Image (cartoon, rainbow, N blue to C red; front, side):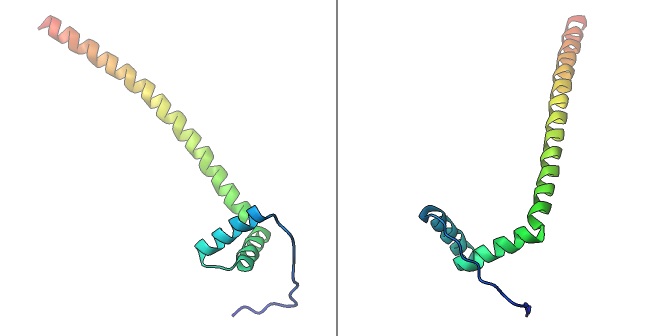
Length: 95
């Protein structure tokens, strides 16, 4: 059990549409709306969100790198296929 020091209540207003989004998300996670909001705020304050953004950034960078590599390999494969076709034509013509 985690014991906290003095706790403060935070209140704020949001429009009905956003509240409904929060309610559905909380329901999906088996939480109440206040529990969900609290967990989101604590996660944002803990820096976990920034760490996640950094990981996502590195993954996006890697995907871009792999995409370039796949493109390069596609070009090389096309050139190789043309070379094989040429060699097969020469072989059939010379046999």
